Structures are given as structure tokens and as C-alpha cells.
Image (cartoon, rainbow over all chains, first blue to last red; front, side, top):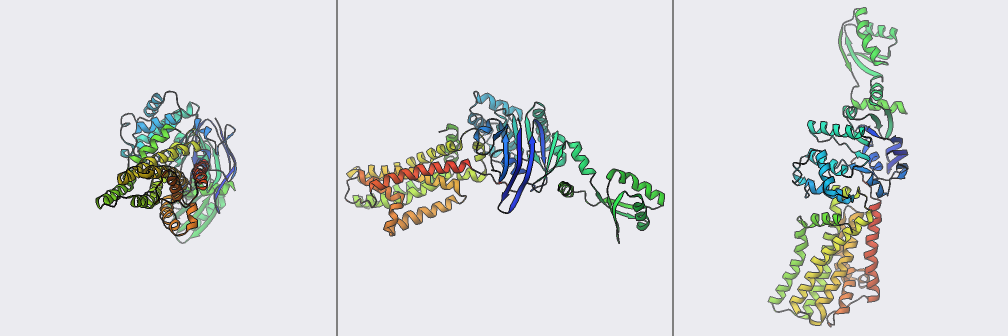
Length: 304
Length: 238
């Protein structure tokens, strides 16, 4: 099953949360990657029928999602907020989901869903006694109880311990391989890389990049990198770098050189050789913009 | 009606401290009646006063706030409503179910104690107990719809509800005669007056206005709340 977004925008008053996004989410695992506040939840809510787009359309297999409760036969939703009745036991919670779906055998469906997330043992305890990771897992179980072809998860790995995280990653991968359409949001690149075959990057409400993780990785490593370099002779090194053309811009500062490398790989290989040839000792080479925010801001500037 | 939605809603309301709130007001009503019995004031005049001022004028709107908003507002607040809304059930059906739960609570915690209190004071004299019980029942159902709607429309449902209950129903209706026409408690008194033959009971609103008004408010409230829930937007933390 396919979710299609066509020129989708969403604004709150004057604030634009999602800006003209067009994408198709097909079978397999798709990661929605972006920094906090990029509009990932807003986009996911629009796909789940919990928010009306201010502009554009969101459809599931051609059917409009907004104000259409029939889509939930095909969608399982794991929201980011807890949203679990604390006074119910895990079993009652998942069973209620099965019954709300009107499944022919709700008991068997609930049992199977709880087994899938390895929550059989604590299923008779009240949800309010659960850890955050356990709550997350019963939420996943409730979303899976009707075996939906489409699964939407909002920051599903938040609050899980490493073992639970690995288990959920395996589960998501397996369901993706089985042909389900799965979309999950995350602000952590490594998380997305490990699970998703396909990545959609959202930055400041805009669709900044799209591709498999190799393509996204390459985009992120091949961008111009900014380095701070301190050496025995900054002036001499700067002159050599300018001659070589591998640096886009060089600024000589009192505390060292600021170098804008246009091609990361080439620059990384070249710098030590060049320094050796010129007889300059390198004291310090440090990336000045390695944080994810600057990677994202590069992507967004590239796409404009 | 959806039994799963109803079951969860009953548990959310009755399994927590809210049930104490629901019990407090009817117990106060019965307590007052016992007091009147003890001091030997258990006559028709007292009964009608207690019923119209406290039972229908104060207890019922406050119970309406607790039950009407309580069936939905906390779930919207903490996000648990998504569990119900992300299922292939129409949103108006969720609202109708929650309305029935709230209405049934109004019957149990509002209408039944009203009858019991009046009966305690004066037995079945002149149909006062039966009249006010029926008035409390229909008014309770109307309150359930109004405050359910309020719970869907605003996050400050309880505050607005309490202000409405205390200011509009108790004070404004009491001082401005014209406002009584648009007050659920006065419609309830009209219903009570139809059944009771007591000379102490006097209604300000005609039956031909009160009945359509009650139906309009109840049906309109439930329908509107259903439409609002259908267009419910989840606004994230972003």
C-alpha cells in the first residue's frame, strides 16, 4: 500500500510547520529523518488522519486520509505521546484495540500481538506500572493487532533501552521485508540507517533529501566541510592549499586556519601529503561543523 | 453505541477519584434532607425549595460538568483518545457512546438521589418527588450533552463549565427573569411542574418552550460534538 503526499503544507497561524512536501511512501521501511522541530510529527499526523493539511492532499491508496475513519483498517499508528490508559492492564489495552477493530478472534489477535513485542509476561500488570519502553511496546502491539499493511511510528525508539531498541529494530525490518509499508520518524541518523531502506529528510518543514542510506550518507559526507587547522606555518600551508584548488575558501586567523573543503575525501587524503611536502607540521585538524544541525542546514540550503 | 468505548469510559470515570466527586454532591443533598427531617422542617415548601435551589439548581449542573466533561476531556488532554480515534469507528459514534455513559451517570448520581431526597422529606405527596426526578433526568441528559460538547471544544472545559453552572444557572437565572427561559434548570422545573400538583411549585417557562429546547440542546450538543471530534487535530509539541 502507498501513502502519497502531494504538495502538502501545514501552517499554524504565521508559522509554517510543513512546507510543500511531495513524497510517496511505498512498501518497505522508510525513515523520516530530521532535527527536532523539523515538522516530522506534523507530517506524520497528517498521514495518520489526525491533522488536516493546510494545502495539498494526503491519500492512502488513492483514498483521502482526512476525516476518513475507514483508513484505520489499513493503518496502525504508534503515536509519540504515551496515550495508554494507565488503569488498564497491557492485555486489556491490546485486547480493547482488537475489539475496536472488530476482529473475528480478538483474543487470539491480542495474544499474538503481545507475543510479537515480547510482552506476554507482564501483560497482566497495569500499564501505569510499566517502564517507558514497556509502554512503547504495548503501544506497538496495539497498533499491530489487526495486522495492518501500513504502520506509522512517531519516534518509536525514544525511551527504550538498547536491548528493546534492537528488538524493535529487528521487528520493523522483518515487517518491512514482509512487504508492509512502514514509516518511522527519528532525529538520529544512525537509528534511521540501521532500519530504513529508504530515507526522507525533513528540515525546517521542507523535504530536504530523499534516497537510500548510502545516498544520504554520501550527501552528508560530500558536502563542503569546515576545518580548523593549526600548524607550524599556517601561511605556508594556506598558500599550498590555494595552489591545489581543493579548498573552497581559506581564512587566516590569529588562532589558525579556517578551511572550507569542497571535497571531503580528496581533502582528507591531500592535507597530510601537502603538509609533508611543504615541511609544515600539523598541530591540529578539527572539523568545525560536524554536528547534525549543520549537516541538516547544508541539506536544506542545497535544496533551495 | 460501542461497548468497548463505553467500558473504557466507565472505568476511567468510576475507577478513579472522580467517583468521589460524583458521590459528594448527592450525599450533600441527602444530608441536607436528613437535617431538615431532624429539625422538623420536612414540609412541601422546604422540599420544593431544596429540590429547585440545590438539587436542580446547583448539584445537577456541577454533576454535569464532572460527568459530561469527564467522559472525554481527560482523554483529549493526555492523548489516550487517540487509542479510540485511530480505529475504524466513526467519531460521531464515539461521541454518542460517551454521551450515553455521561447521561447514565447523570441518571444514577443525579435523578435517583433527587427522587430519594424528596421522598425522604415528604414521601410521594403531590408527585413532587416523581416530578423533580423526571426533571432532573431530562435536565441531566441535556447537561451531559452540553458539557460533553464543551469538553471537545475547549481545553478549559471544567473551568468554563463551573462558571456556567454557578453564574448562569444559579445567579443570572435567579435575578434576571428573562434569562430563565434559557436555563436548563428552569426547563427541568417546568417538567417537574407538569407531574407535581404541589401549590409551592411554580414554573416560569412554558412546556411548549421547555421540551423543544431540551431536545434541541441535547441533540444539537451531541451532533456538534461529533462533528468537532471528526475534525479533531492533534497538535504535537513542535
